[in-house]
View 1 (cartoon, rainbow, N blue to C red):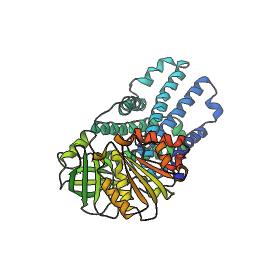
View 2: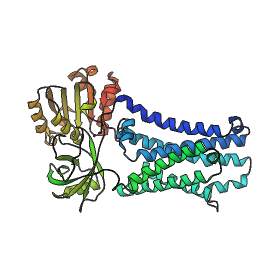
View 3: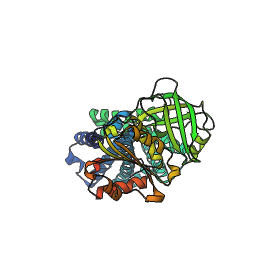
View 4: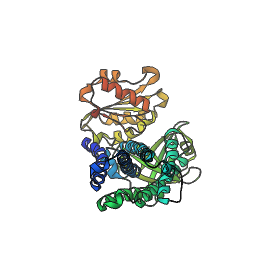
Length: 437
């Protein structure tokens, strides 16, 4: 499923930026007071560790909010929206641990200095500077495990994330009302203000004003084909400006009208970029996609995107093997239809349980007839078993090939690991890993 072609080297920029921003905050903090004074006593040392946790956690939490906004520049520096989302989860989890350790280390400090004040760190009092910190900490403690470990309806999931955005504002007030390091250094104050305001803008942009600020394209459903009881082929016609994308990318789609609610969900684009029509093929997997079974022609669709970098155009090698599993065929539909004739050597394996599930085999065979260097293979599990790296090793030169894989996570995981064991470099294996790792 992916917007611009992103060089492999750009994937390192995002992680470096995250850790550099944390390091710079700590560097500015270290300049406020001489380091020898920060460790002059056990109490001072524990307080310094608590401060390090607070500043690091705040910057990481800001990154988590920024990465949830689906901006193109964050997608670019992390090498794809899937990678940006993984860092969104990583920075969110680390920030909670660090912010939770902040009052913990302050508690340890007070144990040896003023034990009677410990309760004020954990209970609401008349001091609203501390109260904002307590509210922020407890809210994150309740919301984060819910979003990570519990399966919930999409609407509730979105609501929880919006609450976490407001929680960040409470933490923002806690930090800037304190008469501590920030108030003693104008440079540190300015830097942390920029960090926090960037996170607040990202939250407003995506969660509060998500229907107004992000650019969306208006289309109309022109045709809905039910390929099976669980697979729907949806065609859209533009009502204004066309969505421009490269083959293999995906977009967030919301259908406006009963019985389908207007939630925005990501789907790979299955159409040729040279046509004005958009095509999405959806498999029923939950309550929302089940509602699409009742989708009718004439329904308005709002499109946000495109996103991602999963495309043959993003792979330097002209010799490629494409592997699709089930509904993972959709980005390959777009890629095959737009493939230049006689410029790439492609073997495409369309992996299905049996022939009746090969809904798009005829489309790929038509491309193969028009392009001699594109070979389409219907790989049926009931006859050939599961696709694996050993089969691929017998079919191609592994070390001279780039592999593009899209399908169920267990299939991608097995093929990826198998290719790695056979000596294929990770940089020659390409996929969108939402849920892959």
